[in-house]
Length: 117
Length: 113
Image 1: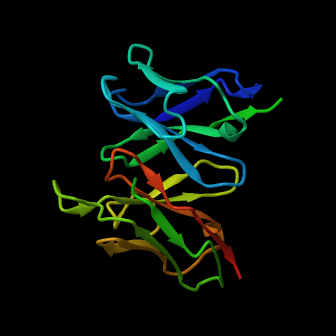
Image 2: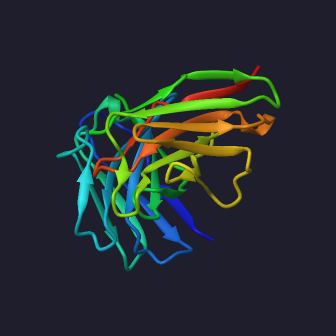
């Protein structure tokens, strides 16, 4: 059974940093992986993606230069390092598996990040 | 970036009636390698993560009831629920996977009238 379990969310002050993790199991961790976020009461917004070998990375304009996606294939874990956090980064962050062609076939339960003073 | 415009934002339908959700892309999302439109539809129930319903504009996922269907081509796509059931109350999102930047529609909230 495919499982994606996010962790690392919490309350952080504006300008602070947080590192999210997504532990993957139940499949060979070679797929492209993504982070997608959802602000409270709002829609889905794509954040970033990383190829299976980590060589290709893309970011949304809103996070480029502040967030860094990475993966450790030996640990079957996806990461999102978030720096210079802003109030508008407050959201539930989901990691997703890409079946191919950006089809998000599995989603984690999400981890809530709250940026507030 | 490709913009996905969903309509309506809110839809109230009687049990057993048809629900139709539209999604328009700002440019073509036709994948030339397989001649399929790179559009997916997701269902998100309250307090849950999204669930993939349909990929390639019209391919239903395993386990998805056949009352859900997707159609469309070019820049106009539709998700249809042929006979709305109580368990279909949710927010539905379209998404394009054509460009390097993934984009979602704004969502359509479906409720029972």
